[in-house]
Length: 486
Ligand SMILES: [Fe+2]
Image (cartoon, rainbow, N blue to C red; front, side, top):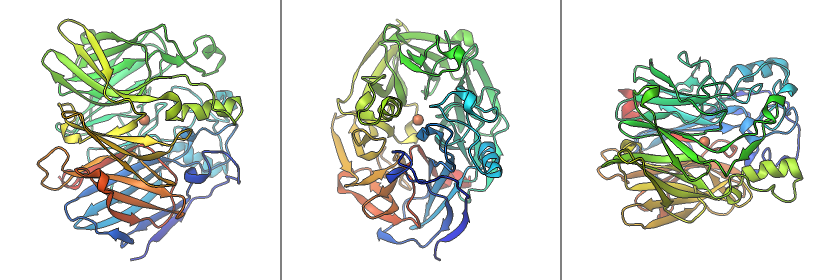
């Protein structure tokens, strides 16, 4: 069956030279259902489940400067079973997306602008912006949950058909941040939010039945900009990072993120169903971390891995002017220099120790979610193109032997976060595939690749051609077919 063009969304975006609206970030307006796609190699029969990716895909001419994190959420899925693959993509029909479709243009300014530029009241910790639901995606209780990093309502979709179910009913007043975590062992969803009013952060647990079971404050000294959380089998971990909106400018509506290198990083460790009085605080060196990896308990210690930034407030990239150059620097991993890092928190003594696990610039990693919260052996990180928010390849770490392996996607080929998909009947932690969408600028098309996680240097075991070239995108999830059919 050829690809079916289901819908073409009306866009008012005019030709422009914005670095994140062109090239690999050129937005897409077609919504497709496609099976029988051209395959280079063979789709393995031992992969069963859905690869889901969120994408920031702008529809209208922006009000002021466009930031790529403002783009409207578009979900792309590739479903695998019995050696076949099926592709679909849809915009998330957020309230903001629908209002702008009706208005025929942008109604909300983005994070790079003053919220007073927006034409209607908006959403988010930042305030006055559109909840684009375009940052992150997980699959929980059988459905996709798309989220927005400035805290939004959370939207639900079917992982196979992309049927839309609107906003999540249990969303608290301060919303859900990006990076809620699914504990596959229990089926629970752990989430947090942050805001500009006390207590500035909350943490919640939703059961496998999709009911909110627990919701507590994580009191912070002021508005903060956390992006991610972590969990072990028994504890949830949050960070009070010394990078936040300048408190002098905030009352005037200016959201200028600054790194306060004289302040420590504070970690909150709380039992999964603990109360505010159960929170244990630990101090570590000042830093900013966008994404954590796995965490686990070992003796009296909690071990946490993540990507520590060497320069959380980099100077503007040259050649773009001050405002755009600053934005470009905050999107450039080679400016912020995140490195794989490990923290150890001793619950008995309160001591904290930390050190690098690797000296390369790496971020946007994944690992086998079956071992999430327990001690694991393998991590998969992405490499990026200097000066650009574009992923160029994957590095696999064996944390036991200290060895690592690399795969480069090839010239002008940019990938997504590459989650680990366990092989049917897998016995080893790395027995499975890494899955990524690739935007190939030279070939002017996009594809989905599967890489054998045991041998990433061998390159893709198969390449499935998409019916259209899609924009570069970031966060992804893997949901096993057996779990979805349960
Ligand atoms: Fe993120």
